[in-house]
Image (tube, rainbow, N blue to C red; front, side, top):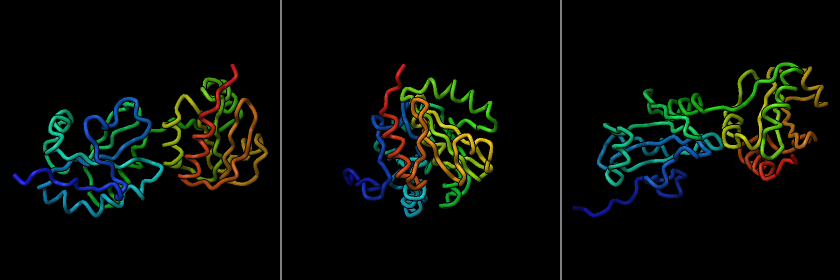
Length: 229
């Protein structure tokens, strides 16, 4: 035997090597794109350069992992892995898995992950929706905070979806799409996109960049607050 192989992906690649212990379970806050591979498999070796680009491409949306099925035979058997590479999206919070059947290109893998990211974002179209959102998910949020994104777009951003599942039950997340003037005026907002964080009924306009990293920090800060009941 050649002894243990070094892992296919080193830490600097941003791809996390997953063992049974580290595999995302029902309490996982993040959605993971996972490649089940075998070290001897030619297709897996060919996929490596593409797979290493995914952590950067999917930053703030999903985490990217890999499982060596020679080392983790039981884990791969549990997941019914029969051919290599097998690529699955493991959804946050034990919401199940999705199998990738499309092309293993950077675009194909990116689009597959983004298309299946679970969302807890509440679509707000009217004042009544906003009232129900404030009285329901906001009031129930452990931090006493809810975020509302007022946007000119028609689709929910994957980063917002990821943040909504990550902080589900802690920070409620709502969205008013397509330049909704009525809801924008409720918050005194006149430009899109604008994110408002309302904690204990006090709204604050987020002044940072609407990018994955600063948003993740901002949500993490607010999620530490405790609602006054």
